[in-house]
Amino acid sequence: MYPSPRIRILLAAVLTAAATGVVLTAGSAEAATVTVQAESYAAQSGARVEPTADAGGGQNVSYLAEGDWMRYDGVELGGAGTLTVSARVASAVGTGRVELRTGSTAGPLLAQFTIAATGGWQSWTTLTTTAATHPTGRQTVFAVLRNTTGGDFVNINWFSFGDGAPPTTEVGWVPVDQAAWNAQLAEFRALTPRPVPANAVRVPEFNATCAYSHSGPDDPIIFPGLPGASHMHSFLGNHGTDAHTTTGTLLANAGTSCRPAPDLSAYWIPTLYENDRAIEPKDVVVYYGSRLTDPAPTVPFPQGFRMIAGDARLQSPTPAGSVNAFYCAGPGGEVGRSADGNWPVCAPTATLMFHLVFQDCWDGEHLDSPTHKAHVAYSYDGTCRGEHPVAIPNLSFLIAYPTSGSAAGFRLASGMASSMHGDAFFAWDNRALGERVKNCLVQRAKCNTNGDF
Image (cartoon, rainbow, N blue to C red; front, side):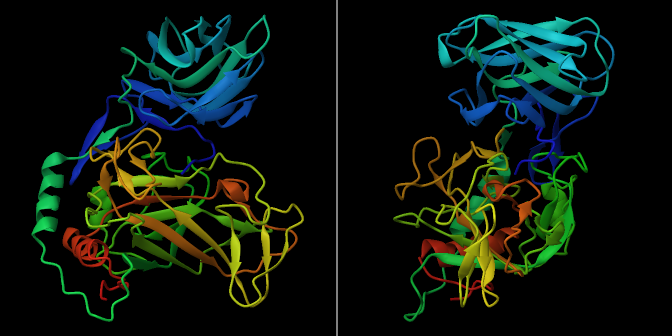
């Protein structure tokens, strides 16, 4: 999940009823409040990100100093009239200000905030000001940091722009439709599991086998309703996936590049390029498994559930042996590295691969969250507990590309190899998914694409 430009626009007050629940929509001039996550910049100088302790989790931009700046593209400032502007900040030292300017780092001043010490780098407060006049519609907004005393002076979590009060910390949380979820759970719990054959492999697993469907610069999780706002993605599964995708549109679209047919989910990854030529996956196995010590409590994904694994903003070297890296599988394996050291060169008989593993514990309350990760977590000790007590299938993508590579290496639409990430937007037939979870995961039995032992 994270596009270029990387501005993630989330609305605090615009909720649209979908066929199977409530979803958060984005980006229109009628929106009461638009919230821009600080780490979702399109360009920056001096910015770093870190996990935040602020409500809702995710990341904040950290330890900003004099002259640092971030650029946010396409920020909807609405129509003429008073504009309320807020910033969520934390500081151990204060003594500076944040300027919001339009057009450039020296453009017209939209708003500014004086930064005082808040009690620590993760002690958060919301600052609010108003602009009597402002540019209207979508604008490029720069956050410029000013400090005359030197040194780091502020962390920023988000900015908001609107015609009302600043957003609550619940911005971006999409609640599960409890009635629909309770009905789905009741159907699941009423299923009678099939007996496991004596010769079955006792590994909790089933899969969907997916082919490449189509490409596009859309991301219905990060940029819902905003076609062309993302970097290029390679889509798997539902043939209708685009910027306007909702749970309802997925379930209404009978076409999918995945087997089994009851899986109408949308899956996507950044497009891989070799010498500026797109290399689409030749096949992707979407595994549903369990890493829990006891998979018996596992429940299906609720309709419309969505999540992201990986980080499109991570741009760092990935030398041989790195965790979560591209690798070569098959006869001959890896025979070298690209000139920059970040990509494997595979033998002609081998295949370029990537294995992407998603989170497997859920908070039980939300279909999505502001970071698209805060509602889920990894089960590092084999259990789901604390803020994420609900066990969900452990999703993973096993991606194979029809290329061996060369010294020239590759690039992703999101950047370096380290920026590999994946998105999942679930839309299964409830019974088909429930039977597979009950038969294969809960009973710890390896099943195939058809859900058979």
